[in-house]
Image 1 (cartoon, one colour):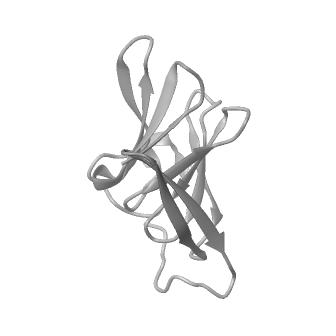
Image 2: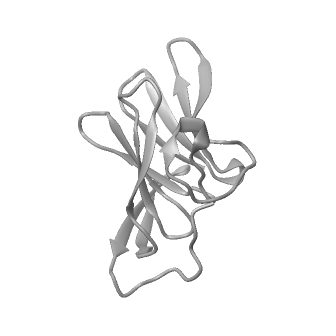
Length: 128
């Protein structure tokens, strides 16, 4: 599980084993699946519940708080536009990304550097 926060109110979670991205609204206590479908692994861009992830492992958020970046375990960097009423998932870099290094900041927070290169490919990657 990976966490990232865009403000004191919203926290985003990569629910690795359930293949989806969740949003925790701290002010209301509400949890919502904003991208992917629980228990349905795959690779597909698109609207919120139509998108598919394969074991999303790491998250980051841009300084505007509108784009959540997801590193899938099939070496994809995907972006979820959370500024939209129905978030949209788009693949930025397909099959060319790997964790380069990681360090533990706190007992449950791991910082990872990710590298991408066109020579690193994922074989057999087909949108599902």
